[in-house]
Length: 549
Image 1 (cartoon, rainbow, N blue to C red):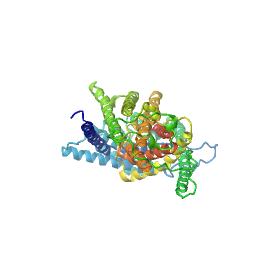
Image 2 (image 1 turned 90 degrees about the vertical axis):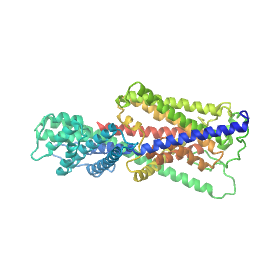
Image 3 (image 1 turned 135 degrees about the vertical axis):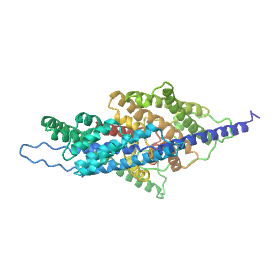
Image 4 (image 1 turned 90 degrees about the horizontal axis):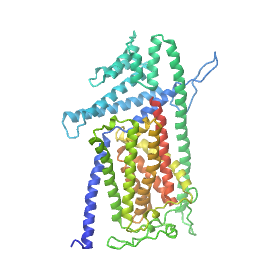
């Protein structure tokens, strides 16, 4: 009975079903957990607002006796303070809602009650927002509202002493008459940053008639404002240009796809160039290899075989093997992701106490281990069907893969941005985000930045494209139409990032990656697109992070 092939097949499917249930449960827990986390985009919006505020302070150098007029710039907000105040209030409202939910869960003694330390962190973050909102109100001539905002941290029982003292300093600076408290300068420099710190210090130096310090501060402000303006123009300018190019390429693709659907008397020749004919993929072939065949043929990976136009023709394995690879990879993902934090816990080290560089080492080690385990799963699963599994993956240095990758990147820009804005309307400020974002923003150390860049722009595109496009999408084409394979692989790619806030944008990105791969028939094209996307996001975060100081 145990040697009966049918019995073994049934046991094999049962094991896959059990593992699938486990994986589905773990994914559901992670996604639901991400809902209670603030969306990373909210923090990025705050950094962007800070950068715009700093850039708005820039004034051109004029000769003596001349007038200084602000230069209009379409890449900057018309009223940066009003825009920043709106952003800060939105984030503050979201944080307050989180705190009320946490307090309700704690009062009800529910199982999902948030730890006290997390509540205190959110409460202190809310109080720090109140300090900045008050400065924005004061600089907008709404002094009474500003003092009211600063009074909230003073009345809060969870406010730490430095924040409490800073709130009292700010109330004194803008009171009538003003009150200058001791250690005011040290508190403002330690508890505030960027534009907010400069505005408070400028008020302090003016009231205390410290002209030399005020002059030095204003000079430093102009240097910082000039640098911020360059960063803002770089980010916004490149985004506008990239979106414009992307829209034009997308229109070309759509027109070519529409032309391909028109009936023709002569059969059209496939054209793999991204800016030439956008030909539909060939029809899928019927499955020749079934689950019941215990001796599947071994593929001879000759260039002649791999040059066939149909991706489905190279897939010799049954659907259960696709199921097996993806389930095993998710199991390995959770196992590796939990093992390193567990080891750190056993060693008595708190991850939050580690600096940026040790956290970068941990993140890099964790992902490198995932890559190794994931590739091992692929080799082990495919070795019964392929004599050399990695020769089967379509990685070819010849062809137009470079143009496909570049054009796909530009097409993805406007599509993902539009979906991200729609996603913002649906989820608001909830949904979580990639934990690496904050680490990247804070990674001013070259070693830390270099490790993270290699991971997000090198390792991630290499492995994820092999898994999701090279194996998963290609395997699906044997059983689904091309559009279904692209869509399903894009959805699984997005879910694998385990953040509700990322599912819609990453699904769109995954679909664009799938289109580029299916048209170019070369993994190098989607790897290039993926690397460009991650590199652009990384550099933008580094630029935004420079405004946090």
